[in-house]
Image (cartoon, rainbow over all chains, first blue to last red; front, side, top):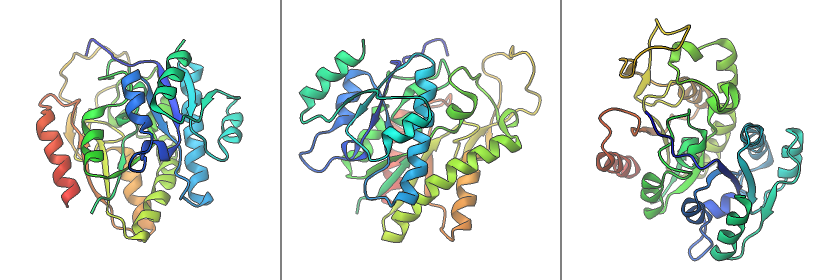
Length: 113
Length: 180
């Protein structure tokens, strides 16, 4: 294959924004329009013994992107994320807890540069 | 009734692909749309190759990755995914798995295999490495679920890296999988 369409931009995304309730903010749709990929964080309804290894894996994968110069941002929140990221040397990526699609779109546009 | 789809990492993040394999900047929307239209919850699995061989990896076949160390890595990831699947199965949720056909790690019905491959990477395009079988991560995920007493979920793989890829047929296959 000769072409590669990747956007070099990755967001760690709160699970509830990947699977929003009816009428809720659909972060995945905004990310797609803005050309960002998503690393989904473990859902808040998972017990800690299930969520913690998933969180560890999300941080591990995020580190590989950052190490290679990709943009990284956090969309929403997840308990334990800061600690997991710190274990991989990723302190305080740009982050937002968006209240609207417009707010998220603006944030992603700024975070891309 | 909508269920939970555990999908390959690259479905939501094409940046994880081997160079040359990203179909779009980030979210591969056709199948995501199909899942969401039907109200299914999406759970993203990790990309086993990304964290092990990294973003600069070559395209590979099973034989190049099938080492004790890579199996151990896949078991670690699969254990975490199986834990999440178990939560949903115990709740009575319908669960499906969507992998990547042709992948040495995430293949469901088609993987890639070539016992001769190795050394300087100069094989031609179109080499006949696609072969029936599952990928290494999928092997380990099924083994982990079995160890937990959980039947392996229905599964399919995205076919966009196969030469006969048909997007319409792919969406139809996903719809059929969701319907059970």
